[in-house]
Image (cartoon, rainbow, N blue to C red; front, side, top):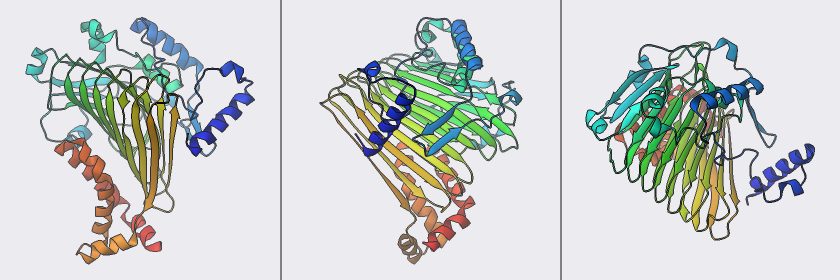
Amino acid sequence: MSEIGDALNGSAAEADAADGTTAKAKAGRHREATLYHALHGAGAGDGRTLEELRAAARDAYDSLELPVWRRSGFWTTSLADVDLDSLSSAGADSVPEVVARTLPDAPFAGRIVQSAGAVVHVELDPALAERGVVLCSLQDAFGDHPELVAEWYSKRLTIDRNKLEAANAAFWEGGVFLHVPQDVVVQAPFQIVYAIDRAGIAQYGRTLVVGGANSDFRVHEYDLAEDFDGQALHAGAFELYLQDGARCRVAQLQDWGSGEVYDASTRLVSIGRDAYCHWLPALLGGHLVRQHLELVVTEPGADMAFRGLFFAEEHEHLDVFAVDLHETGPSGGDVHWRGAATGESRASFEGLIQIDPGAQRTHTYLQIHSMMLSPRARIDAIPSVLVSADDVSASHGGTVGELDESAIFYMQSRGLDRAAAVRVIVEGFFEPLVAELDDEALEEVVREKVAAKLAAAREDIETYATSR
């Protein structure tokens, strides 16, 4: 157990003592390495109809307050400033321009776009449709493919942990459903887009992806917004289930622009027997972003690579909680995140490896590396390990770095000007993960966005580098 994990355990114990919970009452329960809780399969997929789930979620929504996440007394993420009453999920009727500006000009297997509360574009390769691939709105899937949806919808996701998760479960419209049947292999990515083109929007994005046994495919999600004045909200829920032997590469590119966009989303990937997932979120912008990202191994022989990068700028607030959960073994895992912050931004990454009782022969490692690019920015990295099995290997590590003036000088001695030298160093810091996207067109989009952030913060970065 890490020292940080022990400290957080102490905080949890103090909280338990305060509410009168006794040690005896907790007998057999895991010691918590974090004040947060993994989803643990306590979802809603228990045989209730969609209407019953929506009603239960609505009751939870009415009784809950807007969430505030606190971490060991030194980090708080609050959505108290969101004026829900002023926001509407009214649908749009066209694809926002930001979609065309952002998505790469490259082949894709299918594309679905939701703007505000409505799906405004659906496109699927006819050859894949003939092979049984389904890409449609989640609403249509419940009507046209209930046999594919009922078993998986909200199987692990909760509907009552906080007001915004309940809002998503109660109020989502449109949504996305992708089903890749058994043994179907698809090379080009499926593109899922959630876009906000104006202030005053509350977007409850709901995505369900199911990969049949021995299927092999890619999913690219884009979360995008135009620049505007005023508030908007994206409360998202994403769940992906990979059946035995399935393989999937998932990439998420998020850039909500410079508007006052709040993002509180929960994402879960569940990996079955001998299945594999490579998951890489790129979180590149948003006024306030809080993401719960959970990758869970549910059957023996599963393996995963959980990658991620983030870049916070100006006054942005980013809070990431990433879980590498192993419910059984043997299994493998590898978690690697990198992040940077400029301006007066705040970014926090909490990574948890959790190995449940009986998950023997699990091997996993978590690492987080961060780069400070401004004296007023702040990054907190909190790796922790919670192990309840004895035949495992699990560890974590992390680094915090700053721009090295000697490295900048070296680059300048090779003919680069100062701005170009800084750009090369920071882009090189992210490059090992960008290259793991394994998609040239998407890699270029991410590189361009990182370069644009560096250019916007050029003066601040140079001042900080020369002052050290």
